[in-house]
Image (cartoon, rainbow, N blue to C red; front, side, top):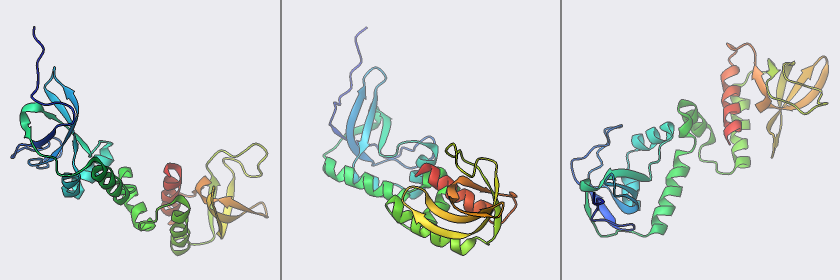
Amino acid sequence: MPSKKTPFKLGDSVRFQDGQQDEESGTDIGGWQGRITEVDAQHQMLLVELDSITLKSLPREYLEECEEEGLGWSEYYIESHSVGPAQPRDTKQDVEQTIAELSDSLGWVYLGEEGREINAILAGASSEYAQMKPWAKHMRKVLRFPFYAEVSEWQKPGSVLQVGQKVKVIGIADLDEWYGVLVKVKEDRQAYVFPLCDLEVTPDNSPNHDPVHLYAVWFANK
């Protein structure tokens, strides 16, 4: 049986035919354009890297849904009969720059609702250390001291505090490049400085529980 062929090859620019929708999200994909990066002749499928003009027009809802589902939004698989030839409208450098800009704007959306809350707290801060400052500011604003917590993460052998030990958190101490927000804690009348990310507030219904948990989620994924 002769192999199937498509009229397209790697690097060709194509335009999606009008009237098409993404099956998962219902997003209108008619008029999208990009360059072919993969050709599956057997199944008559193309992988198209969307151009910068298309990327900038993608609905925010589509971008966020892709992020949450762990799906790529800069490329799209489509049947070869659903596209037509087109003239390129930009350069690959334009595409790379637009992908970087969109990725920055999406931030932590891939974590879902928690990610949106994190984005609101960080307000565009870029580097990890720069992001610690708004976290410290946020914690000073929302936490009510003192409160009780439990060491929830593994500590080095010989450390005074170990998993399962309960402490009384009495305030924000400092910021550290490696350990993030540091808090002042007391355990058995002894005072220590300890990473907030390694604590879990007890009980669960404490008003301090969710803010500290959200910070720990960010720290674990940064």
